[in-house]
Image (tube, rainbow, N blue to C red):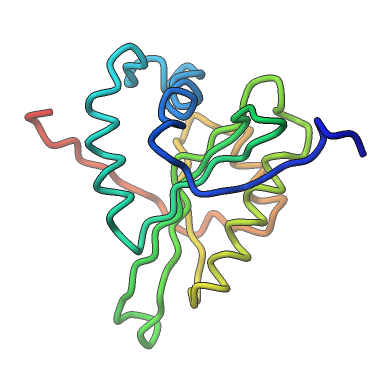
Length: 156
């Protein structure tokens, strides 16, 4: 294995924000809703995430280059006899790493981390237009068991 093949999944730092935001913006949906030229709102959000022990924002780093990211959130609940849910959000893989197995490795890391943190269930949502992502998650054992809904609140 060469040094460039070594992958590290680690907690994100504020210094990672430019790379994370670039990943978020690097697709047709993200290009319409992300603003990589102004990191101010992302810094504010990062401070909130970083200060919450139930939030785990990570980056996948290969040879000093950010090649992936995701956010893992733990939500304690009453349903399912008091189950804790782990929610995987904002999964992004660098364009030149897609199809390399990195996405699988990152999701498997998130599932194992969820288990280690005491979660009983791992769930995620994926935009309805991302049919390739749906097939990817199904291959990893996730089932399309629910229909998700969103309501954008005005003022942002």
